[in-house]
Image 1 (cartoon, rainbow, N blue to C red):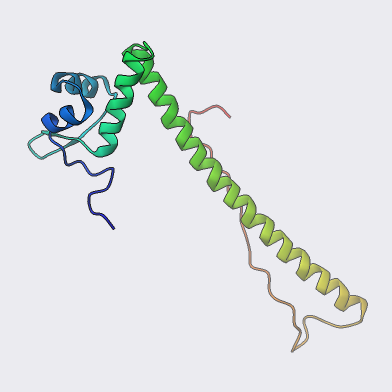
Image 2: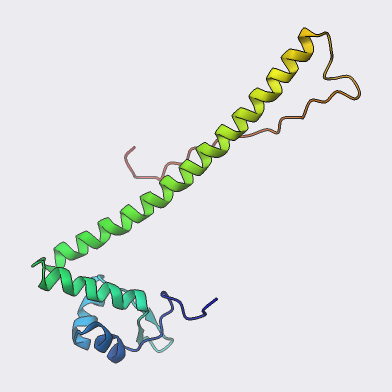
Length: 149
């Protein structure tokens, strides 16, 4: 695994400015406005990651090519982050639904086997019964405080 991945803040502001094609003062402004938040050293120096540099290029593109002002760009970036967060949450919900569906299928199979044994006068509770115990499963629905449902 590469110890210096896309999120590793390694570039000083002068290098990040050169890589992004922007002036260092522009990077400081974008940081101050919250458009890009580089890592910080103990001495509070900015360190940019490759992901930050890609973001700087996208901000520049939106500003220069699309004519969007910095306030609009900030809003776009916030919506993109929220969209990514919601997609992650949706993926987790889909996985939970899949797990619950598998659990339900397993439970139905056990119930069908139990019904078959009862119809034939067998007892699943007797020693040597071949029923598989059903594990308890709880479903918890979490709602973030202060957010409308």
